[in-house]
Length: 150
Image (cartoon, rainbow, N blue to C red; front, side):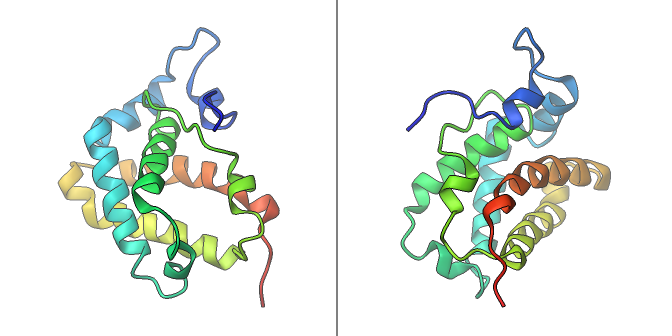
């Protein structure tokens, strides 16, 4: 596995001196830092795994490893200190039969999770929108190779 920073969120979250962009760093802090990211990822995947159209994609996936990678991904996208070290999103999702509708539902689960957990995180609706937007922008990187299914 490549231990270098991914080229997506990291480049957008850090300036040329390696300092975190204040807006994204604030998102990481708003969600509660590492503990908040862990809580969000857990609640998010609890929701995803109840979705009949999404759960089959995770049937043979080691969830502990996936959750760790998602914590890295969410941390990086929100300006935190962890960086996603996995393969590119396109590479990981290619050939899995994931349609744009699946991706829409997956990202919809994130929004529902943020909305339902908003008060527990102490977030405003605007905070939820900002966090959702940052993560959704990064998730869109996988759509280039996503196939449409009928």
